[in-house]
Length: 221
Figure 1: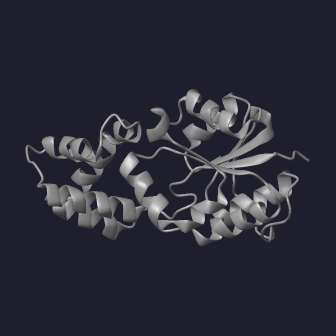
Figure 2 (figure 1 turned 30 degrees about the horizontal axis):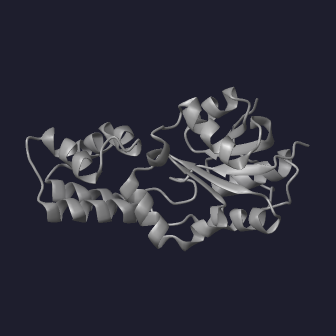
């Protein structure tokens, strides 16, 4: 069995649960937009925000400019707060597996596309991040997944070769980019499937029951 020396986790929809519809509805209401239009514009400028090419004011200004409107400073502050909170709810099932890995002495890292304000929010409010020794956020390196350079930044922090780490991410394009570099990689769908797959295919302790057939598709070098 393969035994990676470290595990790299994506953050959004892996370590935390997805944004809830109520989160999006609240932000859309402040922007005075229908939810579908808000969601479209929210993501249109997100990678620039993740790379820190835009700060919070500029990001939300870009969103509103598409509708020919502006926001007050108070409204921008509310949106930044709501946006941060929407990504700060932990995924308990993932964190149980993370704790088992940590207790087994496996080095853990986070590699995430994340803008500066959201990074600041989760570092302040999510004490469970202390389980991770290495944090690589796109806003700090001006790179976003699936750019190969951001994976290389994470490997430098870990001081490990690509074949020595496992990478889990919910986006197939990010997993494919990591696999092309030689990183042992898999698409994360649910925590239960992810840790069952790890127990079956990797030399790690058994994390969860594997009675259910794991549905985790792997992209391996």
